[in-house]
Length: 128
Image (cartoon, rainbow, N blue to C red):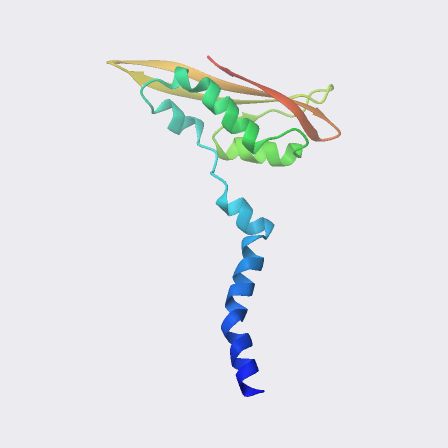
C-alpha cells in the first residue's frame, strides 16, 4: 500500500503537467504575440511586410472572433479603434512615423473590421 502511494505521487506531476499543457490558458500563452505597428515601422522596409502583417492578423483575428477581442488586440498593437458604424464595421488605425535614410515620413496602418453580431467576419489591411 505504501509503495502504491509513492508510485502515484511520482507520476502525479506528469499527469498535472499534461493536463495543464492542454488548457486554453497555456495555449494562449504559447501563441506568438501580435507585433506592435510601431515595432513593424522600426524595421528597415516595413512596406514589404504588409502581406506578413496581414497573415499575422489573420492568425490572431480569425473569422468568428469577438469584436471586443479584436479591438483589444489592435489597441495593444498601437491602433485606435473608432466606434462601430451603423453597418457594424469598425476602423482601427495606427498613426506613426517611419525613419528612412535621413528623412522621416508619416505612416498609417488601417484595419477595417467587417462584423456581424459583434463577431469579426473579415478584415482589410492597408499601409499608407
